[in-house]
Length: 215
Image 1 (spheres, one colour):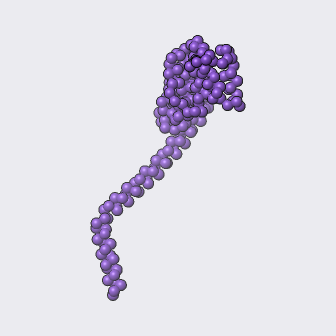
Image 2 (cartoon, helix red, strand yellow):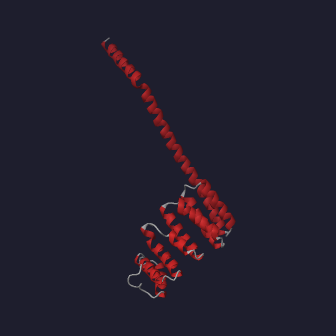
Image 3 (cartoon, one colour):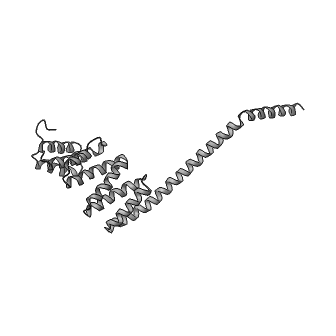
């Protein structure tokens, strides 16, 4: 009988606790379950997006191989619209820019590179800006090209940025500044990098070591 009384006391205590905290526990449980369901759903959505974007990227690559620029641009536009948050969209836009450039469609090439420069991750942004500066150099929009290269870049792109700046400054006949840019590019380029030879050739063509005090 004592055991029954003890059980009844425990049950009464539990009921009292539930009356006081039951609603709170229920809502906390609902929140936790909803958060888990949302997290699981988001992961599934991300995987689904990546898979679809990957398939579209493969289609874009086939169009690149076929040199079908119109098809490349359609696929790239579809990717940036539907899967703009994926790396495939960034890679697709860069590929579309190259395809447009090869087709002498500089306006489209610039638009694709500008999209990556504004929406891409740091690595892809840097690649897009360097290439965009190159397109602007071809158009002789030298000041705009230098503006694209202004600001900070990840260290691994320091040599490429300096080299591109040298190209632009040389085209402007700013020889001392161009020498300084090429010298910086050499300083930032590994001895084992084959691109170092081309930078050295461009520096030699301008007369070698930059003049003292050059910017």
